[in-house]
Image 1 (spheres, rainbow, N blue to C red):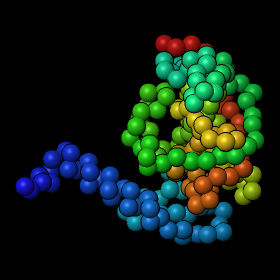
Image 2: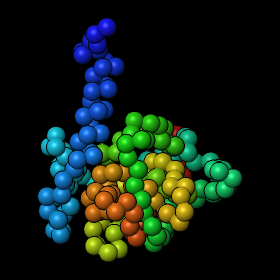
Image 3: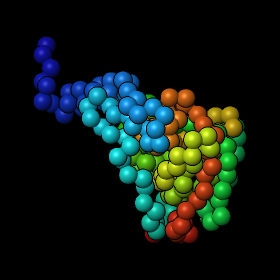
Image 4: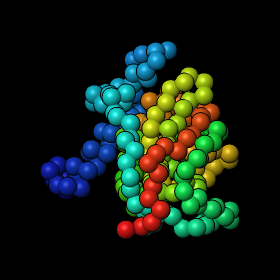
Amino acid sequence: MHANLKSPRCLYVLRTAFLVSAVASCTPLGAGSARPGLTSPDGLEFDEIPDAIPQPEFKSRSGNLETYVIDGVTYRVLGTSRGYREVGLASWYGGYFHGRQTSSGDVYDMYLMTAAHKSLPLPTYVRVTHQENGRSVVVRVNDRGPFVDDRIIDLSFTAATKLGMADSGTARVEVVALDPPARDRTP
């Protein structure tokens, strides 16, 4: 039996395999520089992917329950992101979740500037600053998590790469909500 290399399923499998191998073999080009300088073998320049641009949005119809329970722990979603600021441990999530639906209903893309947070309204825009190297990115929070230990935010692979924390997996960061906050009602 021969596979039809032009079938949508075959093309999806080949593209996914290529992306996974590309990400797995990312090579640092500018270690120690102010910019991460990472390029995948297929030419994707992570440091050229723009930050998220804050804009007014309605709260997501999904992912904004007043409370929700994960593994027996109850989490409370904030009514607004105004004034939110927290310092703590960030992590990142990538390939396993790539292409899956987020809590807000978006499809997770590890190459976009997004993040997951346990309590901020979805969506919320935040500035994340790496406390050791001073690098900073703006991401759109559109998912729930991380539900591990004392971590306060889960970043997309690209955001983690731009912050210089993709190799270590975690970093101490400051997270600050940006204006404009998500609108206080759903459409």
